[in-house]
Image (cartoon, rainbow, N blue to C red; front, side, top):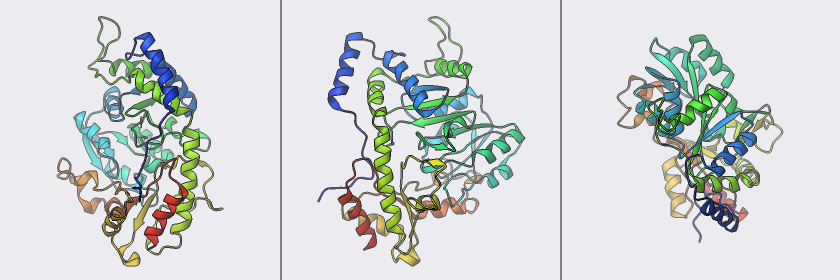
Length: 376
């Protein structure tokens, strides 16, 4: 029986990719703001409905660079329920992460907890659009404006996500994206930063190229985080098929949502549970990057970990994502804000979550294998 992985990369047509590679070979310009790099920035800005975008070689470096660009120091309020790169970027900049709890209905940072965590040392908020579900961006903006704080959104999961017809990437001072192979849209490895004006775009482009503003002028302590032409070519081709991939993911998410309604002890977020029903939020253009379920051991008769390993025995590879919490890792657990008593909702979700397999070419038969296994 074939193994069902938690995800599978969106791959461009190999012949079309080969044609673009021949063009790159002919030009002999393989990095440093080449033709395809510039083209991909333009096409992504158009697709994502944003004014400016800057490409990076992975999704972590734009987070690090965003904090640098905004001169963030002191404390940064963030979530423990994310991939560890979110908090690592704060640490690498010499700032101090302050964890606050999450909204159990979305997995996103709880705005009600943000304000009470603000101190005279707070300089920024770094929320995450968890699983692609937009944060409460209006509330976060109100809080940031009231206390004169910067907002950097980790939008690694939010490629193409829109709320009320507006890109979620328009919110905050800066937003960052990941184009890792596991994401809805990928460039093998890669990432991007979204900004709102040409001046910030220029500053970011300097910072990701060692700070060079010309052949002999360095204007800041930059880093090397440019995307090369090979991955830009790959990304251009994947952009042509990402809509169909998202549509395929939606169909799978609807099947999962329908199936788990009848399984005691298995649930998902309300916005995911409403998929395909009259209660679905049609103001949200989701990308169906993930389908998380949560296991209530008392009702289901099996713990999350028991189900997770039982699935593995049957060659169905879910992922306990996000587990463990970032706040529980040795680098951060000594922080006062990292104590589990401060983070009850995040702790509960981390201890009960499994993200089910979901990707564009997952077959109906494979989806039913996953569902039947959970039912049994």
